[in-house]
Length: 294
View 1 (tube, rainbow, N blue to C red):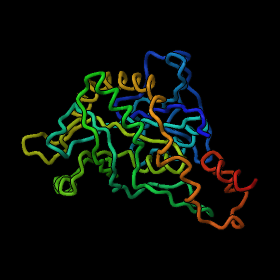
View 2 (view 1 turned 30 degrees about the horizontal axis):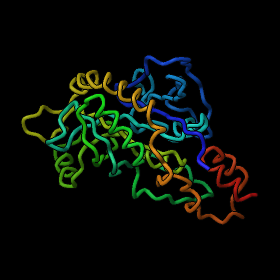
View 3 (view 1 turned 135 degrees about the vertical axis):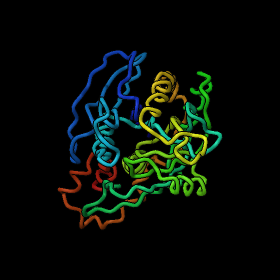
């Protein structure tokens, strides 16, 4: 039986708050993985409850490597979130994706190397499939919202996730283009992997701010350039999110690759799973552990 759906929003660079909501309240959430990036905003719009967290904290205080991705995802699940829309600022590696355009990402290339990428790193091991890392149903919902609002966008695209916080070298930018990556950013991994382990459906909307550094007629990327485009994108992003909140439940998720994915992912012998680790993983994998204990 499909449980009641609830939408969570993870705001990237430039999206640190949500306006126009009712019953808004910032909540501190404790997790076994430490503190989330910030308090989580719980709010309503036309009776629909949502949760929002600014990935870099309000005021942009946390660099990409130091984001506590595990705490963010755990906190969202504690609050009952079943579906996540990730809004992220990115550079373009594709001539057709000009600054200001939105991309509904459907694939990732993970080039990060200094981040913990799993909840299952002590005693209990799990291998979830990431072949299809985003939710097709959420992607369709996002597409409909962008069409309705007449926001320029592309359906489908590969997001290259680099470690950062520095921008790419020219050699790196050209290498990633040769891999047919469409956009480049610093935050969606391991976020998407952890959402999958938590059995939370996930979709990324990437907002293009620049052409990275590969284009000869484009200035080298700097923060002022990024911020200028971010400010232009922010209003579109908020309007898009409000439209998604109205309609996301209209899109069936019965065949989503995330659903119950832990049923076939945990490989560790049940006899070797300690109570301490099971307790730590309760929010993330309690459904599976409780089922097997019955």
